[in-house]
Image (tube, rainbow, N blue to C red; front, side, top):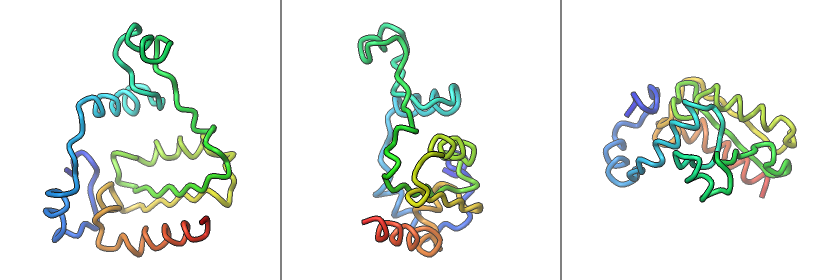
Length: 145
C-alpha cells in the first residue's frame, strides 16, 4: 500500500489489519483512470474524460471535459487542508497548486497544514494523528460553526 500512498511514518500497526478489513472500499477502474488523467497526464482538474470527443459531447455538450475552477469556491467557506510531505496521492506540489488557486480566499477561513513526515495513511491511522491533525481540525470546526 505504501508504494501507492507514500511511506508512512507513524502508522498504528495494531489497527492496520482491522482498518483494511472494514474500511477500504474497492474503487472502480474508471476512478483510477480519471485520477491518472487528471493528476499525471494533464495537471488540470476536470470532470471525467469519457475518452472521446463524441462521448464528452454527449455528457457535457462539449468535446472535452469541463474544468473545475477552484477559485470559484466561495471565499467565505471555511477550508482546512492538511497534507503530508510523503503523500503520493495529494502531494505537496498538487496542494501548492490548489493553494495558488485559493490565494484570494478569506485569510481567516483558509488553513493549510503541512505535516512533513506524514504520508496518506498517517492521517487516518497515525499513532499521533489525534494530536497532530484531529485536535486542530476540531478546533477549526468549533471556530467556524
